[in-house]
Length: 248
Length: 364
Image 1 (cartoon, chains in turn brown, green):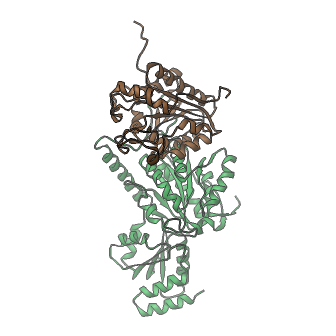
Image 2 (tube, chains in turn cyan, blue):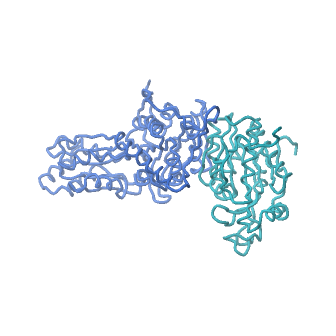
C-alpha cells in the first residue's frame, strides 16, 4: 500500500502538552513538514520562546535554543551571526513578540536580520491563564479585561505586520490563519516563503499566524475557528503585507 | 611585540580579540565607551561581528545566541547597564553558556554618576540575577592585568561553561598604561559538543534552562552547586603583599588595592608593618588565605569604594578570629593612602603602633 500522508520525521512522536484545540501543534507540524521536505534538519536552528510554546523543542527534532521572554529576536541574531548559512527561525507568541519583546523584534527587523519569525497570534496569554495580550481584540474578555478590552483603558490591538512593514529592513511579511484546511495550507506556504526569503539571503521575514486558544477564549474548538474568521481577521486582515518578490 | 599605551577599556577589547572572541554586542554607557568604540573598529578587521544593540538586554541576549551557537562572545557595560543585563546573565548561567561580561563600575544607585565605584560587588559575586547561581568574577587592578584576565576569562568560561565577569571600575577602564598582548599557551578546553551547529549526523542539541518536570530542576541545581564547588576549589586567585610580617592586613581589589599598595610600600621602612591581600577572583573568594592571616594579625582592614560589600565576605572568612574593620568611600569618592593610614591609626589599639603609623603618614 502506498503511504500518502505520515508523521514528518522531524516531528517527534510524543504526547502533546498543548490544550485541546490549540493551534501550536498545527504550526509546529507544518515547520517539521517543511524541514523534512527541504532536507534541512542538520542546517536548521530554532528558537523556543517563553509562554505556551516554550516546549517547542519537545516536538521538533532539530537543534534548539530557549530565550528569555521577548528576547528570541536578539538570541536568534546571535546564533545567525555564528551560522550565517543555516536556517534560523524564532517561534514567538503575542506576549513574547508584541509586548515584552517589542524592542527586540523592531530592531531585528530594522537591521534586516536574515532570520524567519513565526509569530503565533492567539490574542491572549495562554500559559498564565488568559490575561490580555497586546493583540487582544477590542471588546474581548480576558482575565485582566473582565468587562472586555476598551481602547481608552487598555489601548488598541497592535497589528504587528503593518507596524513592521514601514521598516526598510523587512522583506517578507504575511498574515495567515489556521481556521480551515485551506488556510492551514496557506500557512505552510507562507512559512516556506519565509524560509526561502532567508535561504536566498533576502533578509527579515515574519509570518503572523492567527491561531485558536479555545480554552481561554472560553469557546469550543469549532467556535474558536469561526471566531478567527468572523472576528479576529477583521482586526487582523489576512494576506501579504510585504513581499520582496512583488513590486509594490 | 611592542608595548602599547591604551586605556583599560581598549586593552580589554584587544585582549578579547587575541583570545579569539569574534562576537561582540554592546550598548554605549560611560565609563566603558572606549571598549565599544574600539570593538566597532577592530571586529570588522578580524572578520568578527560587532552589533550596537538596541539595549543592554538585547546585547546580552545576542551574546546568549552566539554562545549557544559555539562562538566566543562578549559584552560590556557599566553599572546601570549591568543591572539590565542580569536577566540574560541568569539565563546564560542556567543554560550553562560561556561568555565574558565586562562591568566598568560607576557610582550608584540609580543613574548615579560616571566616576569610579566598587558598589556592584554584591551584584557581581552573589549571583545578581534570579536563581541560585554564580558568575566567576575577575578584578584587574592595572591595564596589563585587564588584558591578561580577559584571556583567562574566556578560557574559564569555556572550561566551566559559565559566564565570567571582569569587574573593573572607571579608573581601571579609563586609565592609560603600557600594555602588551601575547597569546597565552592554549589550555585544554573541552570541545563544545553541546553547541547549536545544526543536528547534521547527530542527535539534536537543546540549550535551555527550563525544567518543568517535578524534581528535575532540583537535580540540575544540585549539579550546578557541585560545579561551583569545583570552581571554588581550583580557581581562587589573589596577590599577597608583605603579609608574612604584617601587623595589620588590608584587603582590597582593583583601584582600592592600588591605593593600599602605596600604604604597604610606605610601611616597609617602619617597624609597624602593613600587608595586603588583593583578591583577583572575587568569586570564588580567597577565603582560605584570609582565614590563615586572621589567626596571627592584630586586625584586618577592608578598603572599598562602596559602603561595605566585600567586607562581608572577609568577615565570613575570618569567623571572628580577629577584628575586621572597614574603610569605604561611596558615590565616586576614591580613598587616599593617608585616609587609609588614618583609619589604621583609629583601629589599632596600641599607642606605640599609632605613633609609628603617624610617621607613616609623613612618608613620601
